Length: 322
Image 1 (cartoon, rainbow, N blue to C red):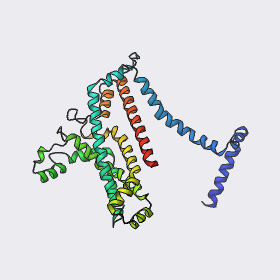
Image 2 (cartoon, rainbow, N blue to C red):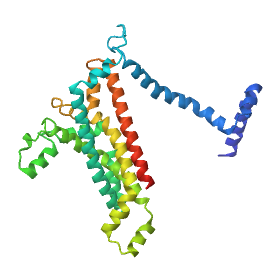
Image 3 (cartoon, one colour):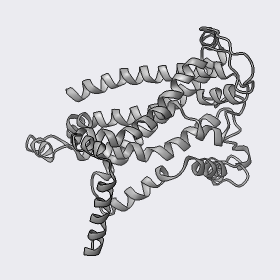
Image 4 (spheres, rainbow, N blue to C red):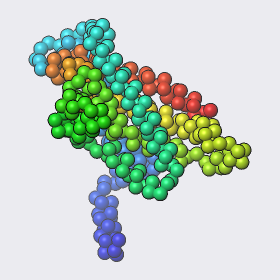
């Protein structure tokens, strides 16, 4: 900063100091550094609490009522646990949960296997590994809306490149390969897209785990004449396991509430083949306008994810302490 700029800054500070009332100035001078830090971050914390905590408590309240958002003037009655009982006894809800579990299982399995393999290959630091790392990370940097529309175009049976590639390999006419309209293929079409987009994320976490393994451990293993296969199973995999489990945790939580990709590609169809829990929640809340019912469903999903994540974190901590 130039001398003129420093002079102007000092004059501004002096003006502010003179304009500050003496009682307030004494209070400010008496605040510790920690208190001053809390003074500055308190507005942000209050804003975040208002954005995150208030909607949660409001949803909990609505879950015990018959409230409908399209009937704001209707008398709101307390229905107790009726919404929760109807949800737990609704066969369609359980089918949606099974569909969600299917997506979560297969996307996590494929992303973990492919992501760890890519991380292991890139960790070899072959020539051009930085360039290929950048290329692999491109899908993760794209917006889900862009990815959904891009793959919807690829899946088109008339002009989509995916159908023509499958037709070239299998000999099946491209017009008969309806990835998004076929009951058997539609779920896998979403699994493929989600795996393509988020495998780089898993790869990054696994790569961080591999890079954190000290070199001297491998050197000691070579002195003991351990084979590369033995080093992988006894050193690489066990020491990278906490990072792999962390990637599974993050992707599991995200995929459990998967919405945008399914909504863009199939909208829950054909029929209800790809109707995951989030799509069911959206339909109940914004198509049937059963706000209280959908709020109860949202709370059930929250409790399920929170409970499973807690159990998983305890298992992760045990692995880290070994």
